[in-house]
Length: 134
Image 1: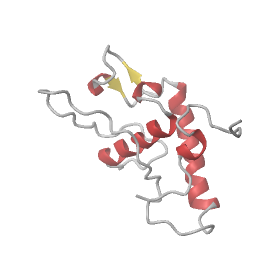
Image 2: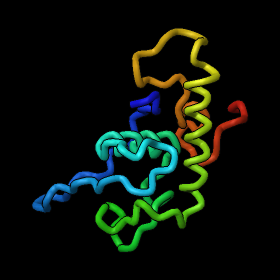
Image 3: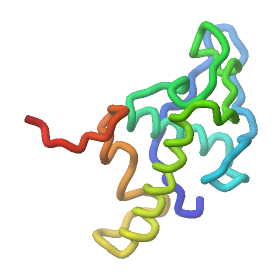
Image 4: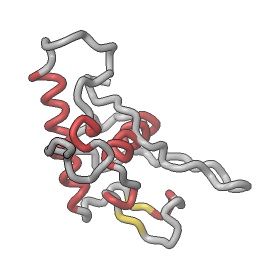
């Protein structure tokens, strides 16, 4: 997938018992990722973001409802949340680190496996962990 980070990211929820399985919408408003990104691949990428930062979908995406597990109530295309804009900047940075700066450094990785991911710095926190543990 064109050197895109294939970090594992939180699968955007399972259907509740008795409900129809949720089908991901066709990605819209992609500005860093290729416009033809497969919806399932995008979900896996989002799962990596959520795990890397310890957040859930409403952190970056506009939600209109009372049950954040109901994925039909999200406006995933909206750019109204500053965290989504920050995520795009950070994704560009991670792609540049992996594809340009670290391309020929260290051991080769299998295709699609990144050397640097969100978790590298964030360690499950919204703010990067830049200080050594005391």
